[in-house]
Image (cartoon, rainbow, N blue to C red):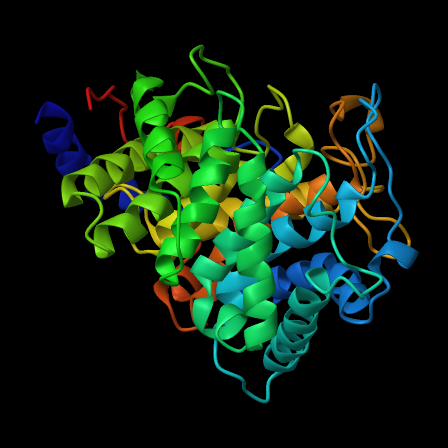
Length: 418
C-alpha cells in the first residue's frame, strides 16, 4: 500500500521528464537525441526489416542453408551447426509476428510488411517440408525443442496471419514435428518452458497436447521464484537476463492461453503478470542516461532481447502504472540507436554477427551461433501497435536514470512481496 501511495504522489512529478524539459546531463550523446515522432517508427521498421530480410527472403526461396553464414562461439560444444537455421527463423518470428498482423496499406512500411509476411508464410512451409533444401533440423539433437518453442510462440502471437493461412498439409506437418519433440526431456531450468510452450500451442489449436509437460513447467518456475519479480533459472538464482529472454514472457503467454481455455485460474495469470511488471521496473532502471545497459550474464549477444518483457507489456497494454508507453519507446529507441550503429553488428550482407555492441565473438557462449542472434527481434513487439497508438504518438519521455542523474524528481523504488 505504501508503495502504491508513493507512486500516485510522484506520478505528476515524473511527468516533468517529458520534453521540452531541459536536460541537465552534461554533453549528451547526439546519437541518442530524440527523433521526430513520425521518424521514430520509421527507424524501428527499417531496422527490423534489415534484420529480417536476409533470413526470410532466403528461407522463402529454399536458400537459407546455402546463403546464411554460420559463425559459432568460442568453445563450441560440437553440436550440429545446422541448428543455426532453425534458431534464426524461430527467434526472428517470435519478435516480428505482431507487426505482421497489421493490415496491408500503400505505405512503404505496408509494402515491406506484406513482403516479409509472404516470405514468412513460404518459410513456414519450407521449414517442415522434408523435400525442401531448407527443411529444418527437427529430428536430431535436443536444441530443436528450444527453437520450435519460439516458432510456436510466433504462432500464438499472430495466429490469424501466420498459422491460419497455412495449408492443411503444412499444419499437419507442424503438429507432427511438435509432438515428435516430446522425445526431448527438458533440462531442469528455463527449458521446461520450451516444452510447455509447444504443448500450449497444441492446446490453443485444439490438438492433442501433453498436459503434464505444461503443469511441470508452471510448477517448477513458481517453485524457483526468488522474490521481487525475479525467477531462478532452475533451483539456483543466476544473475543474467533469462527472465527476459524466456521465463517471464513465455510464462505469461502460456498462462494466458490456459486461462482462456479454462485450464488455469485467472489469479495464476494475474500473479505472473504482476511479477513481470515488477521485473520490468528493473529493466527500465537499468538503462543509463546515455542509453546503455549492463552486459552481465550469459547470452548477452541476444542484444536488445533483454527488453522483451517491457515490449510485451506495451503490446498487451499492461505496463506498470508509473511507466508510460512513450517512456518505453524513448528508452528503447535510444538503446537501439546506440547498439545497432556500432560497426560489426551486421555483415556487409546484413546478417547479424556474434557480439554485443559490435562484432565481439569472444563474448559469445559455447552454444551461440549466428542464428542465436535473431532473438534480438523480440524487443520489436510494439511494432504490432498501429502508428497512431500512444506508444508512437506520445512525446519523448525521459526514463528513470536520466531523471535521477539530472537532479529531477523520479519514482522511488520499493521491493514487492508477491
